[in-house]
Length: 202
Image (tube, rainbow, N blue to C red; front, side):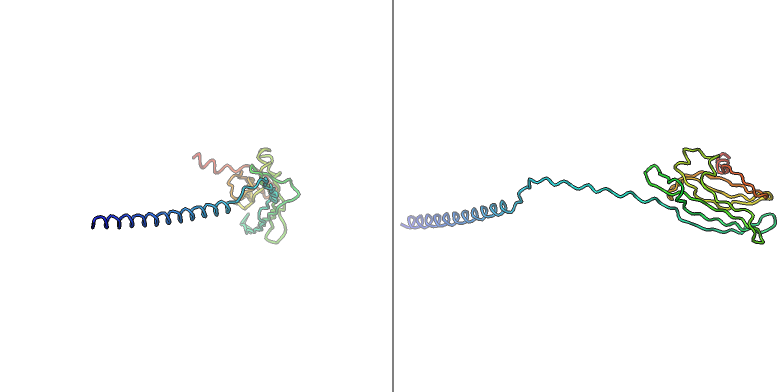
């Protein structure tokens, strides 16, 4: 009798547990179905419209001007003190220079004035790139600008200026060094400065 009662209790307990598990499974199934329905509704339907991106054309960069400068040197020459004034300006009247990357630059003009101790003008000339065409190839000249002129040195017979023609990009070190020799008579001669090459050979 005891075993029969125990057997009935176990069966009853098992049936209750089974019903409870069925309720839990049914509840979980409902939650999963609801989540799936919500996810399906929230998904954005792909649009059939074709959206073409508008091509934005970059405006061409404005031509670049090198910075203007004015410089003055007091120079001892022929036992007297001369003053050499040098002024660089962009020359918009000259053809623009286009480098290998398509950037455009204005060329320059440089004015050199040498005055005597009494203030009278001994020499006054505005140089352009064309003044150096006799020593620089035409191909190189087309992509180059007149970069600068400075006092180099003096001797008994002449005042020597160093000049450079080269790439107008300030980050470039591509240029041709030149020498402008001014005689005591006020005449000038232009040549390439080969002193650096001779130093390398030595």
